[in-house]
Length: 99
Image (spheres, rainbow, N blue to C red):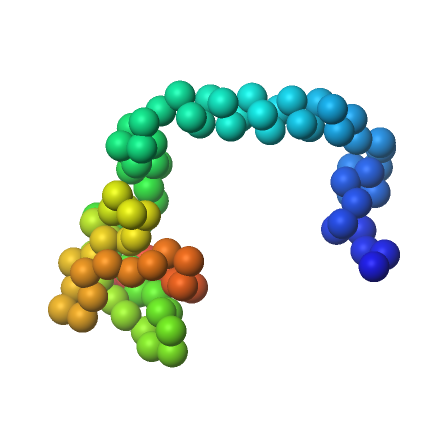
């Protein structure tokens, strides 16, 4: 397949130093693992745009609404809702803040 989006060299208009990319990726991973699981969730909560907000989202073939309560230990979106209390993040799409 010959598409621009599969070549960093074409997208960036210059050759990419893949050694530098690899070092950057490994460095980022090492930094990420400096935190415990709970510390990572706490750090995420500091930047969680939807935390405490009324949201709507599509899950499966249905639309739901509730207040985002954060991310659970098993990485599910926790909600305050009449219909759902947790949702698998991988299966959510089109999240919107309501109001």
